Every structure is written in structure tokens, then in C-alpha cells.
View 1 (cartoon, rainbow, N blue to C red):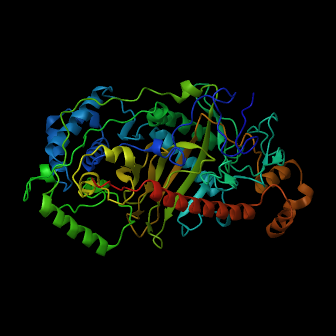
View 2: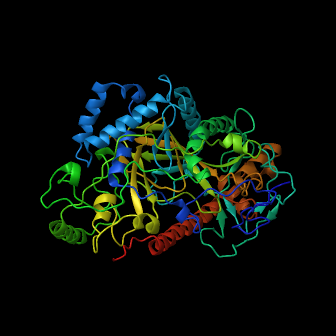
View 3: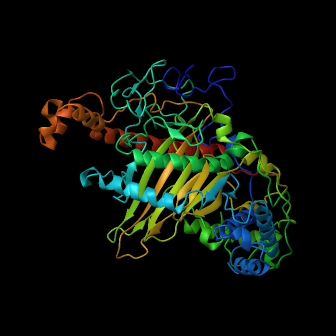
Length: 603
């Protein structure tokens, strides 16, 4: 029996309940869900542990790290480099990291390069999941696709100053409540062969608001995933990728299928903790605030004196520093530093915690998307985008902190493949996490009016948000990254390496829909693109001579057609979608400030 779908038979906030035909398990945790925010938090983590995670990320970026980590001469050099980096890092911290990496290396064959979990959460990276041959094939296929797009139809992302080229983007021709046509339950689903011919079939989607009026759900739009069959050895895309022509771009479909295949093992690692409601254990535990004697300068105890304290300061090695840029008030910072100095003089500096001797931490039970959903299949939203820089526009400022989509899409994890980087400086994708204000802060014993440990130990602030910068991952060519939708992420800035020549970074993004729920997909929405529909008609007939008219007249004639949707209208709706999501995220930030602000109790 076909699943009931939110936004079709059911309200947009519908989720299957136990006992219903479509129920296969509870939904994965998601930072977008207002009711699940507390369940989407990570443990409150010390700055020193973040520094350790960032060091291990840096080491595992090195070729053959799993072999080199057992060479004492090499690890001694790594230790010296880390200790002289200027970060708040101690000998005990580096030793722990080396021991942990040696343990991880012992679990894999010397000639293998499996995916690496680099941060709790779990962020997973691999530089070998996709072969050099695959990368080259994808580069050539996308270049051919780019060359088929006339200059006048290049789709520059709104507000990007013609730097971000959306080759395939889910915000164009999405499901539009009150406008899109959706096949009713029981009707045959679309296929790659008939999705354009069936344009116009179905019933206009009603606006089916949620019972609670939850703004986590859009009342206007939903991105459309394609259906992916994973019952065989290789995944098969069975319905069209929104905005990627299913007949003309068959080579790209095959390459996206290959990318999905290689992303699934990384998604397995990313989703394992969420699947099992697993809580990560900490390498450094901190339960009691202690102060050193006045005048103590040992960096092992109080940290390096040349590192300014503040949210995130001293938490990362130089190449991975992350600053959200949200607090630029120098006067406020100066006042806080004065207060901090007075506090240190009164009580002495906080003693910073150290890790103990390494012992393997508990790991979540293994999880396999293929084993769990082999017969059910997956839904995946696909995006292809280029960041194009020129001597006239030589730099990219970076993105904003966000999680993907709205709850209509139920995105649980993302895969990003960086398949082409040319003439640009290095850049990173940064992450930050939420923590539980009530549970985590209550576990720390501290004296009356003693709040500075929140900053020195955890990089947070009294009356600040319960968010911590985790660190960044280098976005080098050939790298595949996956991460869950419980972490916020942000694209870092970069610029041209040689400012006299153009440069670019090209990615494929795969957004995985929660496999425990089915949403309206391209299986249920036949082609909405007027240009595809016209092209299909012209191939079958002369369309009453339409193709003989000048292009401008053709567009004027087609503007009078109610459905399918013209590119002009689709771009207008995209502006609405982007504005709605912008306002949604701003509103969510305000709500977050209300519910997730650090407010330590006075004893």
C-alpha cells in the first residue's frame, strides 16, 4: 500500500505513528524540529577537547597518516608543531591524540583508507571514496552540461553578485502548495521516461497547514527529492532529479548514482549515533571549578597567557579557527576583559582540565541504511553549484550559519563532494553544536558569582547562546564530506590564488530525507518546467510552428499557458521561498535565544 504523504493526504506536519502502514521507526533527531531541539544537542565540550579533535582532524588530513602515526620520529615532530602553534594545547593532550589515532589505525589495514570520523556528531570525511577517474569523468560531464546552457540562461544565485552559479538547485521549480500538481494516491508514479509527457497530471496541492501552526514547516514550498532504489548492488535513481533533464543528462544521472553509492557508507557513520540515540562520551570531563594560586603561569594549568579569552578563543589550531562574526563590539569586549582581570586577581585563574590516559571510548552500534531500508528505498535532494571567481570579483565572503531546509524536507544528513577546485586559496566548512543549558551546566559545581569558567573552560558566555564552535574541515578537491542536520555549518571564505586569472570551486550536494518518512517527491509531481514540456512537444510535432517564431515571441505565447510553470514565474517563486526561509531562520534564532541562553543560577 502506498504511503500517506504530508502535504497530500495529510497535514504538512504529519509523521507516521506506530501501527500505521507507513511506520518503520521514529524520526531521526533534527535541529529544525522545535520539539526535538533538546534531543538534538551535543554534550557540553571543553575548549581543550575541541582543540584535540581539531589536531586529530589535521593529522588525518596527512597522506598515509595511519602508517606514519606509528613512527615515533614523525609523531615527535607532529607534537612539536602542535605545541608551538600558539593554541591552548598541552603535552598530555597531544599524547592522548596520538594514542587515539594509533588505536584507530590498528583497526584498519595499512593499505586501506576508510572514511574518518573527525568530530562528534558525526562529521565524516574521505579523500578516497571516489576515484580520480570518477572525479575526472564528473568534471567532464558537468563541463559539457555547463556548455549546453546559453549565457542568458545562466542561473546566478540571487544575491551572490554573479559568483554562485546554480546548475541544479532545489529552490527552482519546487513543490508549491496551491500551484503544483500532485498525483493522487493510487495513481501510477512517474518514471524517468514518462515524467515530462505526464506534465499537467494530478491535482493541485492544497495548502495543508499544521495543527500547531509550527513555523518549522513552510506553508508554501517544499524541495522535491528523487527516489533512489537501493535494493540492488548499485543505487538506481528511478524518478527525475528536479531541474536535471532525465533524457538529455543521462550520463550525469549515472554519476550521481555512483556518488550516492559511495556516500551511503559515510551516511551510515554519520547517522549511527542518531539512529541509536547514542550519547558521545567526553575525552575531558569537567565537573568542578577550581582556581590556581594568584600569579600561576604554568600553561598546562591555566593555558597560554598570550591567548585572549573569549567565546571560542584558544579552542583551535591556527588553520581551523572559527569566528561567527556576530560580536564586533570592541568596547564590550574591553569591558569584559577588565572584568575578567579583576576576577582573576580576586580568585586566581581557573585550572584547566587535562585528559587522562587514553582508553577507547564507547562507539554507537553499527548502522546500515541499505540493511534498514533496502526494500523501502531512499529519497535524495540533489544540488550542483559552482562558485566562480574572476579578477574583477576575486573573493568569496563565505556563507552564514545554518542547517539545511525546513521540516517539510525532513533532511537528516548531507553529503558534499568537492570535485573541482581551481586557482583558489584553501577554505573550510565549519561546524558548531548546541548543548543542553539545563543538564550540562547543572553538572558543574562552582562558587557564588563565579561565571568566568563558562568562558575559559567552554568558550561560552553568561547570558550568551548555548552554542559551541566545533571546528572546520578542509574542503579540498576530491573530498567527500557527510554530516548530520543536528549541527549548524558555514562555508568559509576564500579568494583567487592568482588574482590575474579566474578560479572556481564546484560541488555536488546530496540531502538525505529521513528514511523513516516519505515526502512528496518527483515520483508524485510530474515535470513542472515549461521549457522541458515545450521541448518534448516540439520533438513529437512542430507544435503548430511555435519553434519557427522568434524566441521573444515564443516566450510571449507561452506566458499565457497556465501550466506548466515558466522560468520567469519559477524565479519569482524562488525569491519568495528564499525570503520565507530567511525570515524562518531569523525567527528561529530569536526563539533559540529565548530557550537556549546560558543563565547560571546564583547559589
